[in-house]
Image 1: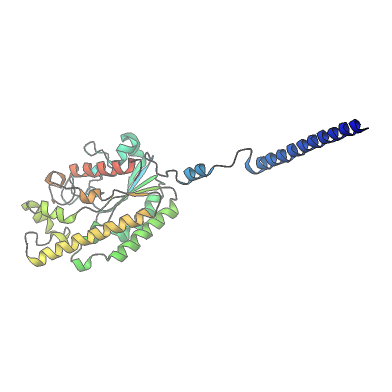
Image 2: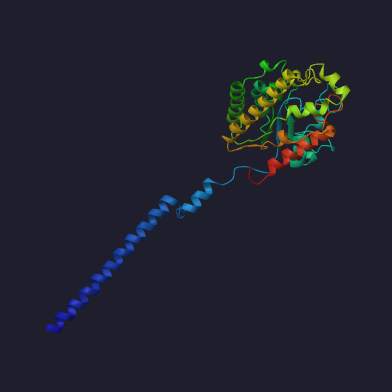
Length: 305
């Protein structure tokens, strides 16, 4: 009687353990089925995987089309003939073999001819950039190259220069317009050249100074040989305003994940006489345009800004 009871007890325990095992399997199975229903059979991403997804680079170092906006520098003004545009040698989109523009370096010469466009306008200021961006957006470029702001400092007098707050608002408007029309387009923003250095280089050339009198950047180039305190203050005021503009370009661009600047490289570039137009000794020559293309290409193709 006692042994039978022991056997019955052991059998009951085995049955209980078996039942528990079946129940556990059922519960786990239901849990797996629940993951399948919610996640399509894939495990939830780990924290590290989620972090990698959030920080994945959004910059494409090989865009397949380029549009340029800006002013006379991007139009190749005075690089080929006096007081004339020469977009063929533009640092951004020109087809010249002497320059190898940003578009040529990125796309190849044949594709650059079909898939790059120049909407820059000689004399344009930052206030004009929104209209240029609007026109460029119709082409749906993958990269928009921007060089603007020199004419905001190159005014008849220093008091006529664009106020920094207005310059910021105008650039922000242009960027907002671009982003609304081209949400995934990349933007390369060049810094503004050091206009005072251009004056210091060009003032040694008599022909250049005669061309300056026709109205090229009078706030910096007017009365070119004067070194008195008033002229020095005027030129330094222009120099400082350009520095302020460049800071605006950097700050506004930094707020956009798909925008890069040249990190001040164009402003820091020491243009010599070989890099200046042999007509006005102020705008970039063909060689100067090639140097701008090199700077832009390095910035666009860098693995990280």
